Image 1 (cartoon, helix red, strand yellow):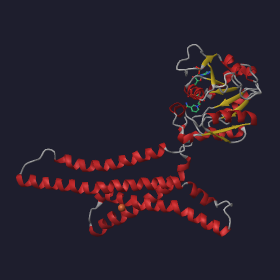
Image 2 (spheres, helix red, strand yellow):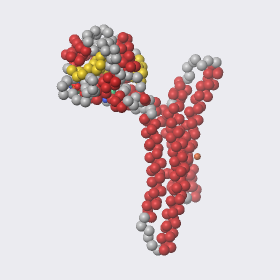
Image 3 (cartoon, helix red, strand yellow):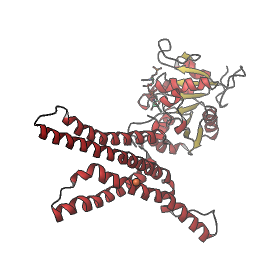
Image 4 (cartoon, helix red, strand yellow):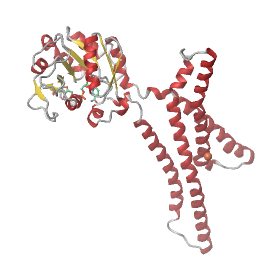
Length: 373
Ligand SMILES: NC(=O)C1=CN([C@@H]2O[C@H](COP(=O)(O)OP(=O)(O)OC[C@H]3O[C@@H](n4cnc5c(N)ncnc54)[C@H](OP(=O)(O)O)[C@@H]3O)[C@@H](O)[C@H]2O)C=CC1
Ligand SMILES: [Fe+3]
């Protein structure tokens, strides 16, 4: 295999193989990406500090010293943390003209004034740095659960280098999204640290309506009877009031899912064209319909659970009363009476568990940039 730094990816002599890709670092991410590349027909060469003692290397890959490995390919994926980038400086000559793929992430948003990719470009002058793969997690690569995070954001100053990396991304079955020049690296590095960015607005809307309806029910069903008739109805809070809040908010959210479509249609009819931009507020609203719909569904599901729980609670309470009366009549004590009261309350816990289970399901199906470490 000869090295031609200006040719993006060297073609392997074996026609079943796509070409050689070099990966620096035999850590979690390097190994996972190597494994996936091997699966997709690439020849993979790892560059490591300890080529002989590296273990868990995917079968079929070669492990060499950094310098030897770099000679084998014109694309080098740097699967090493930013803090160790200066170790590359002695190899500057070998890396000249090569495509260096920066996959690194930080621990905090805007942790450094300069993005990791820009730092790499300034340390190894003459190399073509492309930022990519940082939003894909090692775990997703290995387990093949890439459904929710097939998008690979990438950026770089050299169009040809970017195209070569995009080709690799595509051949791994992922979708490259070109974000422009290396200046965009800072933003791309922040993506994995933004926790569910698409859920912020829907979360506020749902929380707002839930609190509002809950307070309304609380005032009319608990505070009002307490003030006017000195009647204590606080026992309604946990189940009856909650079960009133869920369907009301669920229906409001469902309306919020369908309303923007109607507004959009009216605007289009009014303007007489489909090809103009919607106002900003409508755009934001349309974009969070999926999340609002998911929460509406979760609330409807909770409503169903609580509705099922309620008659069981009445039944249990009836039994508790029945046994208390029986105890008084026969002047004896039944040992397990408390158990029934406890049982009735455990149904409440069941409802809450159901809720968390649903939320978990929702989270796993998110288009998650947040998958990556
Ligand atoms: N893990 C993940 O899910 C993801 C990780 N990333 C990024 O990938 C990069 C690697 O992450 P990950 O594999 O998890 O980390 P690991 O700690 O598992 O591996 C890092 C590797 O870097 C090499 N290394 C460590 N110290 C030095 C040093 N002083 N000089 C030279 N090489 C060194 C080692 O390889 P060797 O011993 O072979 O030299 C080591 O195995 C990071 O930048 C991370 O942000 C991006 C997306 C997801
Ligand atoms: Fe109902």
